[in-house]
Length: 213
Image 1 (tube, rainbow, N blue to C red):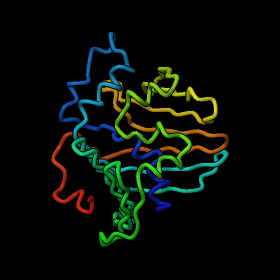
Image 2 (image 1 turned 45 degrees about the horizontal axis):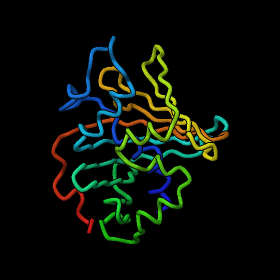
Image 3 (image 1 turned 180 degrees about the vertical axis):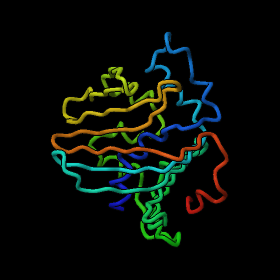
Image 4 (image 1 turned 120 degrees about the horizontal axis):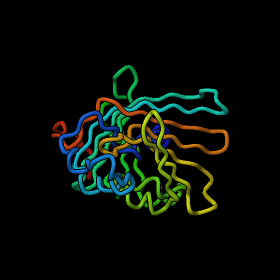
């Protein structure tokens, strides 16, 4: 469960770092006229399935303290989500959820624990970050600024609730407005996630969500 909670903050929030898209033309508009916030939010309706690997790095005051790798699967129908923790490309633990229950499975796919989604979410200080795939609500919960650099476009998101002390940066693909990386900063702690080998709106492997009830 701990590994699931630690990984889910950055890796699942993005839900995508698009390398190639089956439906990317749906969200693309001419760069000169592009409203990146609206373009980003438009994927609420256009993201149907996702498969991607991620690498997550946590640093304290610039010193790396942990690294994790995994794979994410998402299906819009039924709001199904699977997160596999990987070690040397082998699955060591999985977490599945339909936003009703979270099921934790061991490396053989056997259920070892579960928790109510609602109960787990209530225990999270930054609830807006866990509404997976709902980019519109993410923007509504934050003051968003679009920053243009030589490296591309980044959304800088500051919580509107003053009791939430963090900064969220979402690096977007300049052409299709999807996240390529995400960084969360809180005090001296920084957690970043980079996603690779991404497939969007393609057929997911059979039995991807087996274990959901």
